[in-house]
Each structure stands twice: as structure tokens, then as C-alpha cells.
Length: 349
View 1 (cartoon, rainbow, N blue to C red):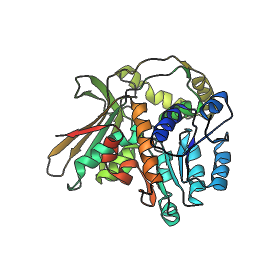
View 2 (view 1 turned 30 degrees about the vertical axis):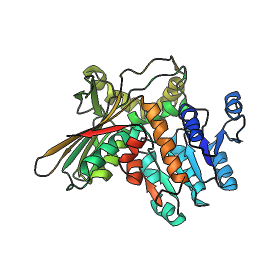
View 3 (view 1 turned 135 degrees about the horizontal axis):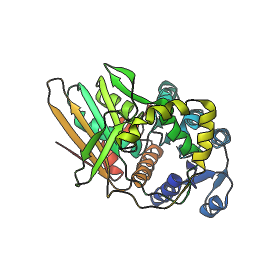
View 4 (view 1 turned 90 degrees about the vertical axis):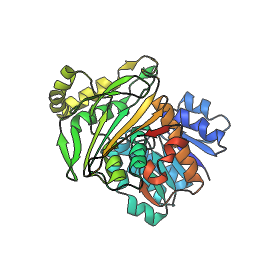
């Protein structure tokens, strides 16, 4: 049975397809009609579908063993596509990394278990890079009192338009605002709060600050800690920029402003640029009730390349029947060693 790659002509899809073919997998390319899809599909099966609903119908009709969702806008597509997989006991994975899409997918755990399906969300740098470090630090240890994770992706920029899906994801961060776990409860915080300048193990420096990413949920689940903070280097680094975030958040929360901002941002043309740092890093600091601390790092190369590696590794394992029924983030499904299998290096002290 085959592995379907939805959005095969997008950046992640184009990177995942050859990795799967190198592993000898039967890959089906799925996407909207385009010259690029026809070019990529020479000698392979292609399914033309331009919406999540049409992709879901094709999945229900053909019953692929594994579906890899790389089309983005996971808050709007993930549950539709995943439920199509559950109808025949198929498996599903995506690269969601936000606090809307990831919890929705995890909420399908009981349905997936009953269907004998494995659903994996966050199969990329955006969740696994920090989740794997937390899981490694906490393995065999008591439940910690507090955890902080920092994600510092280094991503090369491609030529082209930013696109609606990515624009909507960026604005979702603004609308959601800051989040953290305090005393076991998900609470609001100021977007961009708790900025910290990290000295990376390779000598580079990066500033991270709080953002509502799925790393927060994954770190809480991996550690059991009641106090968890998630920070990222994607947030504006300067104090002046962080100061205007609350105003931008209030403006974008207005529907007419958000629709206008999405259209304008989607039309921004990006120019190719190399990655800003040699490595991408996931970082975690864990503090136990007795005051002792542990610190760990995950090192990898370009973050999108790592995401493609994680996606291919998870898809291959699901195709081999190695997943357990239910819905999981990647390290919860396959352990922190998954990050190493996908090309990362974990160290701790």
C-alpha cells in the first residue's frame, strides 16, 4: 500500500518525496493541477485535488496506508484529512506547530485508537526539536517543577510569494497572543515576554522570547511539569519591536484588519537568502523540585531539511506498522531517538 504526499509540489513536499523514494516506498503525489506536479509525477501516480475536502474524498476512495499532509493551514485541514484516514485504519502525519491545530489533532486520540490508526502531528523541527530534548532530559527522572524550551530554527529563504497559508499562520500567532503553563493551567502571557539571549554551543548567539507554539504543549506532555514556558527566535528581538506587539495584536484581532493583512502579507515576494546561522537548535532547561537543573540541546542543520527528514522517517515507520494506535506528537510516538534518526544530535549536561 502507498504513501500519499499531499502538497507534493510545496517546499516540504518536494523535499520529502525523494527521501521516501530513496527508501523504496510507493509514493503517490497529490496536489492541485500544475506544470510542476506533472513534471514531478513523471513515472509515478498523481492525484489531482485542490482542496482538503477533495483530498479527503480521494483518500476514502483509495485507502492509502499513510497520508503525509504538507499543505499547511493545519487548523483548517488536519482533522478533515485525518478522519478520512481513520475511515479505513490508515495512518496520518503533518508538520503543524501551532496551539490550534496540534491540540485538535491530539483530541482524535480515542477515535484513532479505536480505528487502529496512528496520527502524528508536529512531525518537523517546530515540535520535535525541543520535545526530544525534554523527553531525553526527563527520561527515568521525577516530574520536574519547571521547564523552558527555546527553538532557534535557521531557515534558508526561497524565491516566491509568502502565500496565504503561511500568512494566516503568522497572523494566528499575533491573534492568539502569549501562552504559558502555570500551576498546571494554560494561561495568557504577553507575546514576546521573557526574552533571553542564548549562547549556542557553536558560539553563535540568538534571542528567544515567548510565543504560542505547540512546543509548549509537547514539553508539558513530555515532562509532566506544571510550569512550562516556550520561546522562539522567530519573535522580534529588539525591545522596541516587542513593545508594539500588543498593539498589533489588538488590530489584527479585528476581522476586517485581519483579512486585509492576510491578503497583503500573502502577496509579499520573498527573495532567496541563505540560512542565517550554521545550525538550527532546540534547547530545554528542566528544574526539579529539589532545585537541581538539567540543560539539553538538539543540533541540526537547515530546519526545513530536518523537517523533511522527520517527516520521511515517521512516514516510513508508519508504513512498516511501527506506530501505536492513537494521536501523538512525534517524540511521544517514537521517543527522542526519532530526532537522531532524522539527522539531529542531542546533548545534555
